[in-house]
Length: 220
Ligand code: GRF
Image (cartoon, rainbow, N blue to C red):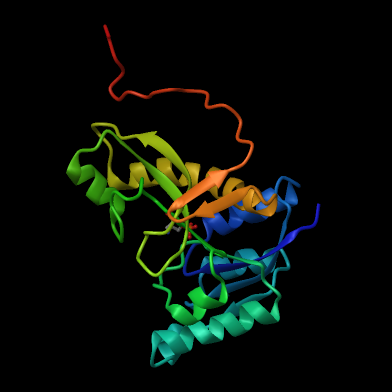
């Protein structure tokens, strides 16, 4: 199988970047990371890239007067590295049209909630404050909105009574590290068909569960 070329956009610690690197090195993901781009200097993601001999570039957003200018520079670097698919992995920026138009339906993001619930920032606190019994994470294609694009895959985790935001975050992050490589592999295999908001996935295996309950049902 031919491998797809990834460009990974990061702003911080990069545990999702690491899960993608590990999946590639374990031969589970038919992809090559051509470049990692960080908008923040000195972050852990850059060390992770260097450790695995992946080209890493800092494009400091503070040096650009407008979002579009910054995005144009990102596009230039992605094109130089012949990137097919752009992966936002903890990239804390809203994208503008130069980037969206250069990679239509070729940008993925991961969000630590079950979209469309709890968009934006501080989502674990929002989920806990709302009192939901389940939360999770979502991989989606990126469009001009914030956390609004077509959904590719979601994972669900229970929320427990004594959860802190950090505990919930860790539980969700563990699932992020599974569904992001899976979403990229589906793309690499040409199994994602997008029609409007809907992403149809070709040849999916049958679901293992038909429902989940939290707390568990007792008599019913
Ligand atoms: C993840 O929770 C991701 O969903 C969100 O930012 C966090 C980044 O974590 N967008 P990491 O940098 O991949 O460790």
